[in-house]
Image (tube, rainbow, N blue to C red; front, side, top):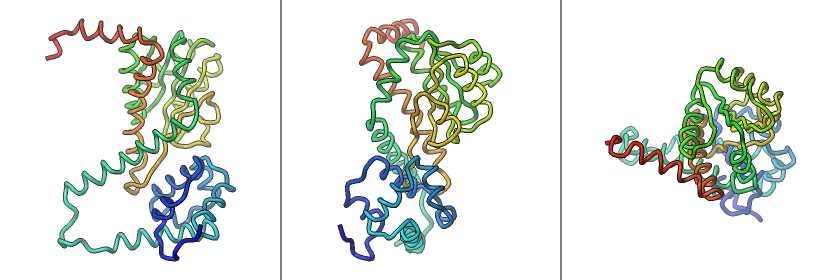
Length: 283
């Protein structure tokens, strides 16, 4: 397909059919701040997106660019035009505009997450592991601990044997007691958080299945994992990708809850029992 020379990058991507690997490359390119985009190499992009360098070259040609260099240049020029475009009212961006921009970025990431989860059967595999696990332990630090907490609160309502402690010594303690019938869910956007890696490696060494929820496909955590759930980035706020992707990651908790109930409807009775216990005390 041929494109007009001045056709923006986003419009080009919308005009072609992209393979999953190519879509990941596009999502990462749109999320990268201009100061990083200007110096990003093919190797850097390959590592961040989890796509091969040949996929990057193929995408460049598919979008009408000779290579990554020209594709980066087109993106930078697009950002420069958007940044220099004067606002019609001449005022600074309003709070409502900012709110819409942030929520739009979250929505785009949620769509990318849905595509990623639907590309393979990993979520079905994970649900199968969780229903049979003797113990399910969640590992994560800092803001990733918030994702762990969200997953814990949903799984515990189904009566699953799930544990989470935000203090990392306790996480390592739980990991040291795990075995082949257990599942470790480790959350780290960078895939290299030391405390999370310590607990994850301990669980893996003891025979537990290791599931990585990460934004870095080629990270140490991802490479050690038996199953990976990748957090895709999307066009949004420069420098905010990690924050917004963690918001979307919390949605994985509800995905797992609904998938578990669909696979084993009797689990929902445990959630009903909890509601009955609290009854009107929730008010």
